[in-house]
Length: 173
Image (cartoon, one colour):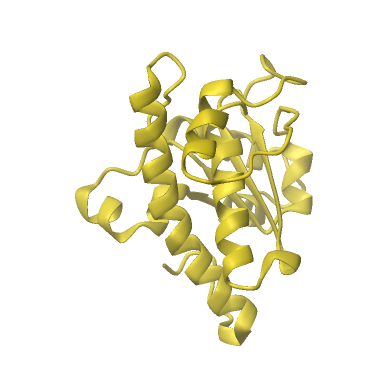
């Protein structure tokens, strides 16, 4: 299974989600069954490493944060992904535009979800975006990480069920 997280510049939220989900799947014994990467909707940061503030937030919570190379998500990337997970509604809209450019627009669009849709508390509150911490302070990076952790816990449970033979559809939470 292949999953790609998508945010704006691929230096804060999406690489953070990549690290967190990788850790959750490793804890569940599924690390070798899922390939996880991340990308941005824009090319501004292509080639850059993760934002140091995101890396510090991860480190403070005990996550290893390996080197990262930011890249832009392209329509062709849908072909190699089972799930494409947006961090906010703006990313979701951009991914919908890109899905229309693929050979199978319905399949591409069907692979896209918002990350916080995997967090029942976020769904109940109607708060499905992970706000961009880029222009904020350390507290905003911590808040984004907390939201990402909660959503990745739900996503990891869903993936674990599927990998263990549950066979649920990507839209089921």
